[in-house]
Image (cartoon, rainbow, N blue to C red; front, side):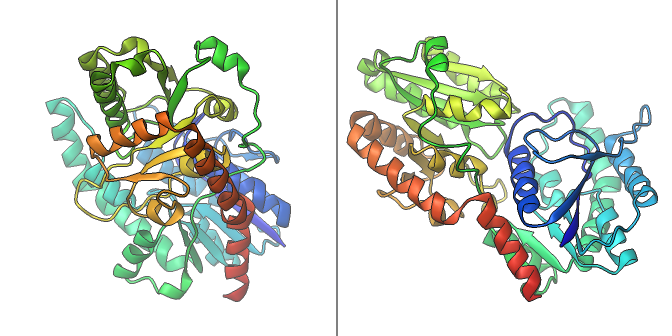
Length: 401
């Protein structure tokens, strides 16, 4: 089989994060099973096969949304059918060239739909000053939301197979009229060779003086759904109630992003600057080493602001599991299906600082329990949640259709 993979969204210079991991994971695994051509507007970190770069359109003073719409026409103009069996495209609000080309070439179209850009525009925008709020609101509702709605509808109608990462996303698609039989619920995955319990990270331990410490860790892009600030708050409460942990523990916050200012506010409030290490963004290839120095890994996902069901499938969870580490996670959405409380993790009520703090204390005190959780989690991720198994499910569903 031969296929075309399209990555056309205008997110540039991403060096780390779930989208980087997901994109590389899908491409690398797909290329093991089929002959794959990859088209992108930039070099993609961690991708192991050649990438054909079609340079992005960047008209001065034009917003990325307009440039991305125009970029679709550039891709359509330049691409010729090379007898592909199907097209696979990672959905973004302004990307529609995959759907168009599949119709033109009369071949199946697989749409990877990780979230609705309309929902994100309405609920995850963080404009801080009055001018940006006012102008942004007008721009969103007069241009972005109507345009994205039409493009999203075009993609969903054109797709022969839509791959979503969670059941709430499938439910959303069915609610807008997509037939359930063309939707595949396929959780994210991990490269279990890259992420494994046997990584030597002595240089990271030495750099941050982590020897003889129980290290609690988090990795992410500090997005509005990550709850990174809650991790620092819970750790601050822990040290306030149990000051003896100041000598035996350390919190390692790996990454950077929109909620870093809130994280720093809590560090200042609890006066724990010397107990919280902020690494900043690190290259994706170094993530396993940083996770390796941790004894406890935390995922503190918070509920959606509108009360809807959490639709994510955090790649960090699968990385945590593959590292064979003890995990604390919010008991929310798909996470309660992937992880089993008291077997592979301690599951806590989302945004409940006291529960999160108590889970930290339990695992800090119990090394045997940490090892048990880590062994169990590694076994399950090897059995069910590798990128290869993720891709096998996609190809099997396509074959059945």
